[in-house]
Length: 230
Image (cartoon, rainbow, N blue to C red; front, side, top):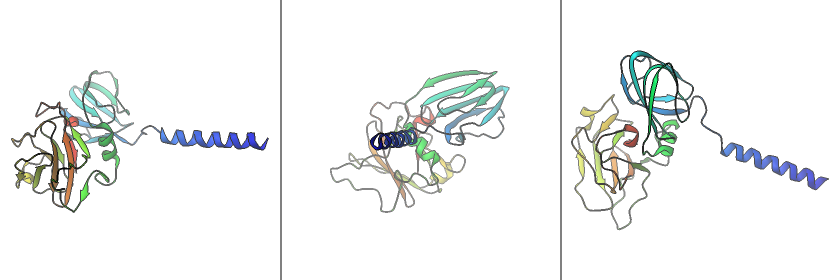
């Protein structure tokens, strides 16, 4: 009898632990990125994060484009009532077009919901690792030749290639080209990177190592495929 009771207690404990590991995103978690807004949609702007459970009302002429962080699903919604979900929206009275894109979904979702700007992904001093024949492990992947950097503080940006010799891209006037005070679009500034390259981007005392996907071709495209938070 004691052995049976111990087995039951162990089974319950294992079940609880597995349940905790599989806990899905909850209402209130940031699950989507606003990639575009056309019209007047109250409470959202370009490059806002929106939380699961939130409801947005679109007028007949309004269009909203969302990128879902974990599912890498891109939605273009015209009109209606939109309830933000975990992996896609629930749309009532409007039209929605969905397309799957390549994105670094798990990392973006983690970064969007962290109180700090990335924990294990973004580092404070020392500076970018030196090229010594061993490339630092990337903390992010982008699927475009030109990232959009989300900065915590405005300032100059420098981008150094780590896996091959290349000129450093120095952007001393990056602050003058920020969108909404914190987003810098490398493509809009006239620069692009090399597919498959590993880079270190630095601004102030913060830096991050990221890789450009070997199949990347476009400079522009979905913000979700291009976003690097630091």
